[in-house]
Length: 453
Image (cartoon, rainbow, N blue to C red; front, side, top):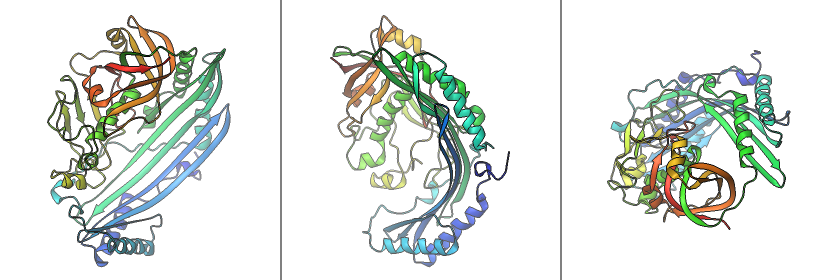
């Protein structure tokens, strides 16, 4: 290892140094006339490499820093940002935020979170695992990933490349209610995309791995082989006749289905009256076997955080119990608009676990339960209406008969309504994908329209 390599140098600041800068900005805000203020400062470093057909296509080092200041002058709000953390720049940024506030309208709901909602005990969630990886070693790992993919099948004829990315960051947040906290974190990923051809059939697919701890990443060759196998399995895809049938969303796509549900229960969608689940708290949204639990403090998890983007404490929560929605996903402003209290979700959910219920089944069992229908492995387009719940997206995957995959399909569209789709969930698999803030297995929906020929 050479310490001159920017990829392995330590972060440019310590938590204590950033905390001092945050406090300085808060003091400046008070002196400039702000009645309340909050400040967030972050520093980040990273390395990204990409190879295609064995040749280096991208090699990027990132070293960023930034500060965001929000001030409240009475009920007027102003915000400003800067990438310069010198004393003069901090003072000037605060002055600009105060000036902006003088031009904004008063908002009775504006202001910092209530003091009793702020995090007081900040647990160590084991999110920081530095990796002393030089650029040359990162390139070699990406090459091995791609080479493994190209060796899987003679029909794998081309590559869109393999990539490896590292990220190490430190964020410190404070406000004039006395909150001051921060934590370092890391994130790593390896991905591969390859193309295959069999006669006139051409397909592409991918795979990736991601983790806080680089030692928890999948083996790079395994990532490449998985990408190639997925591509080869799609060769010879055909269209099918328009029909109605059960649809099984594989885990990485089932996450998106749950994401649409979360979008509908966010505070902003509720107070703007723009949700297909308007005023749904306390009602049956899923079948009774479905439970959704938020677990913000899982060690090393990608969605873990000891506090949210406003410094509010994150806590375990049963968001859906027995299929019934317990409440909404709220930051402070949305909560006040709705006459409620923040749920510690400024910035989103933290490790939402979609629990499969007492009769959980693996992927093979889900296919047997479905009998005849469609397994969706790719979705295209953005045909989702968050207000009405209408859902229509291009799709590709595999047709199933007698509980077994028969052949790949493409150039089709699946359509339904999200409210009915959520209530129509038949089963949730044990094949949980943990590569994000939403952890779920495959989700089987009882029936959707599949438009083909």
